[in-house]
Image (tube, rainbow, N blue to C red):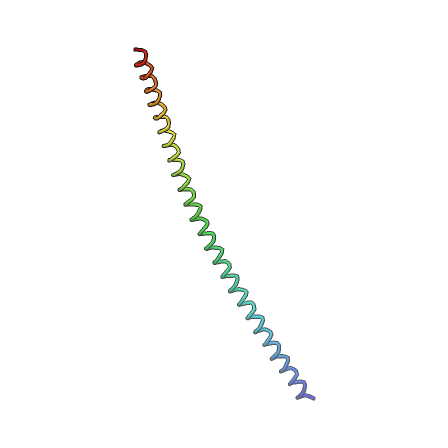
Length: 93
């Protein structure tokens, strides 16, 4: 009977150790997955920040181009107005 009790304790110990190993493996796998997900999120954030920076730069260049286009339009309007007045004066003479 005593041998049977000791064998039962030994079997319980082996089974418990096996479950603990399995649980530790699952914990390690979950930790690795979480670390990988965190790295992926960091990479995505870095990519998003880079995209935001490029978008800001493009917006600034677009604003500068729009300002230059408006200035060119004003110059063209002024030149057209001068040309119109010159034509009026020359047709009156």
